[in-house]
Image (tube, rainbow, N blue to C red; front, side, top):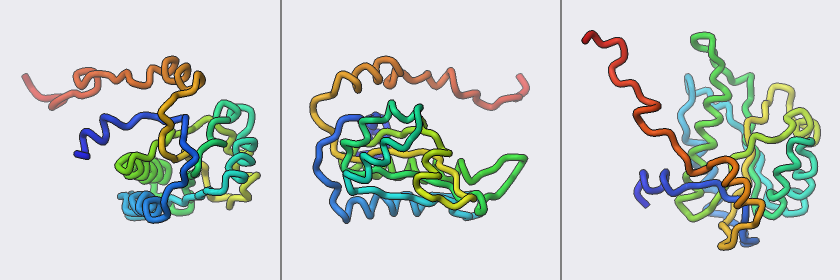
Amino acid sequence: MELMELIASRASVRDFLPDPIPEDILKEILEAGRLAPSAQNRQPWRYLVFTDNARIKKLALNCGIIGLSNFFISKAPCLIIACADSSRNVRINHQDYYLVDTAISFQQMVLAAWNHGIGSCWLAAFSEKKLKSHLHLPKSWRVVAMAPFGYPAEKKSLYSKALSSFAGSKDRLSLCDIVTMNPGKEQ
């Protein structure tokens, strides 16, 4: 797939086939994250990868009250939790970059997966405190996001349809709404 086609066609997937992701493809997805740029090359990202369905189901129950909306992750063959090690942070212009760097890395993984026809759904609805406790994460780690990964099921569940419709997932602002060319330029 061409890059722009890959970016334009990627969408959140909440219904998965039970087929596991081949090990070589999973490794390529993780490698895409590893190769991401980061402020001063600090590489603060840390990934927790779950491929055991029983562990994924247990994790789904330990995301806190807000995380109950993510029950669909229990049907995914793979779940990746993106963490950021705050001890690897660099602060520039009063901005901490460890969270930004981890988000860039995770997005590269999402696109690498989609290049192989593997869907995902970036999730932020979880209790970081509850997840950190359940996973016994180091104090310096932050849970940035998590995503189920798997081959998309052909038929969407009612839940998926409703959530996509409610969120307006396909709606995007136009370029003229988000871009200012040559700001401050004298007229």
